[in-house]
Image (tube, rainbow, N blue to C red; front, side, top):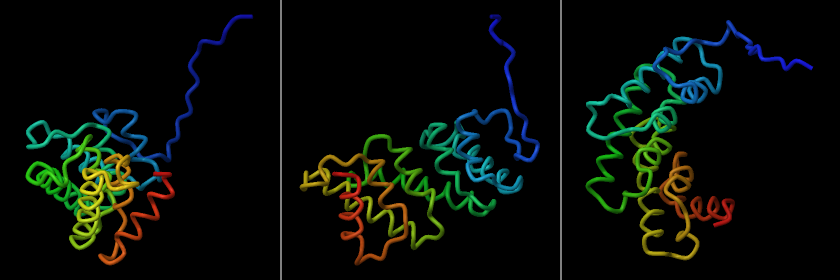
Length: 174
């Protein structure tokens, strides 16, 4: 038996195209919901900006793709990169927000932010969880920064943050 060595590839002409500088893994994240070409272009713009080597805070490819995966327009791309920068600055200036994999944690948190109010709510939730974790409060002690950001990325009313956090922590088995 002669092994078949020719690589099979299926070309989907309907799938929007990403520029060559976007890695295959990042492209898969940016294209996860089969966006229109214009929406994908906005996501690529967001990704490119997040990855700029001149930026104050370094951002990995994975974090940039995570940050930009739900971008819907150029304005949304600008908003998400601005909130990501705010989050990174906050982590550098306030220990309550600092954690491991900071670029990814900030990206997860900001990826769903639609406006300043939602961003503030999510940021406050993250700060509360990380503070509890730092003080080894019961089930919060073993939570990762990425799990905390995942819990807090959705819009929460201020009086519901504790209950929401407890619920999601129980789902994570923490």
